[in-house]
Length: 311
Image 1 (cartoon, rainbow, N blue to C red):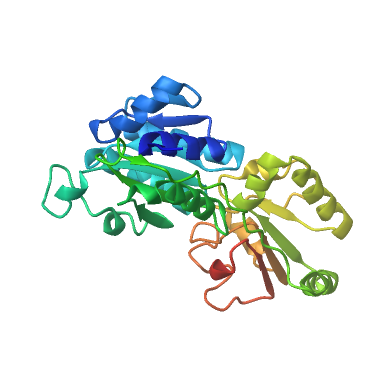
Image 2 (cartoon, rainbow, N blue to C red; image 1 turned 60 degrees about the horizontal axis):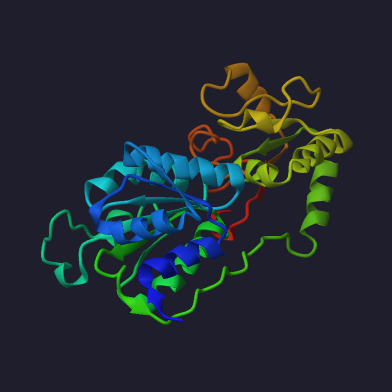
């Protein structure tokens, strides 16, 4: 059945389970907001500032372990939302940002508030998808959610020209794609068990990816506690993730992040095995890449992260 691109986009969002979108209304995507308001199947949360809309989408994604969605207008709208994109990128939080763009015939002519979003957002998004044909609209949404939620989660931007929303297409809704799930290679768990058994002073750092799993399944934190108790492991939650392990538990290994006490850090550095579980190990956690040292760790090191390209 034929429908406008705006209706196709709305149905594509619905197919991905989206029930709310955060925005500051703008003329460059008014065709889509009009459909959302008419149908009322997706809550349109109107914000005062695109930065607020972006961070609401980040929080929505983080709390529900799926991509949150924000919509912004071109130019200053995108610029205001960029800090939220940066936060989502560095915190590995899934997010989809829909951007209203200039009409297709005006691209490359220095139209009002026109920008090259592929270049502008390349360092703070996993991908920028530009829709130039109505037949690509639903596919773009499916690709955006798949990319945002797979491997290392993060933000994806979808650029939508303002003259595309009223065009009619008979393309069917592209259904959600199966998420890829990382798992240990055969024998890896046995190797980890061997390392833990041999270690006299192991240390386990736990970070954001584990928190993401715990949001969806709170029993993950019980599993972590049992791991600590059964293997007699000190557990150290990392920067802004203190809720991952009870600080009153006998196996609490101290906080690892900004301004770690010198005596605590010295004790941590005496570890003879370091396990990073769900932690990317940026400069804040690794104490400016000195623990572990990069690129070659100074001690036996196990890095557990869903994307092998970042290990």
